Image (tube, rainbow, N blue to C red; front, side):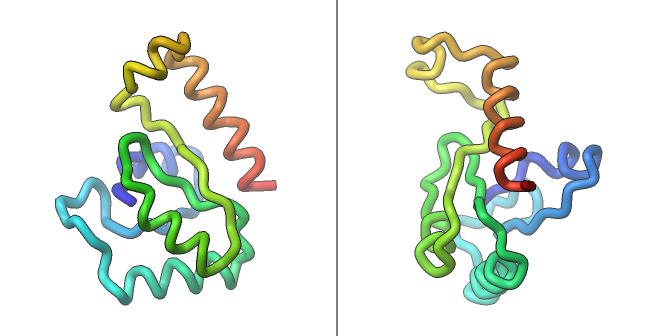
Length: 107
């Protein structure tokens, strides 16, 4: 999906693969990008493909269907839904959830 977490990944030394470079304005990834992502997930046995809040999740779902990996929301905290706010979401709670997802993905 879009990748607003470039600095996060760099700061923590995380290897990443994204459908678009940074926060691209493109609406669909190329067929080559999708093939490369699917291949990487399979080759590296990646257990989780992340999408960001307010994403259509189409890219993550397509890769999941092809590879059997799970999908999960990695919250960038750039946008918080009214539903999340009503449930009491805070920056700290969203980041703690991200941490738990990262533990699962990197384990």
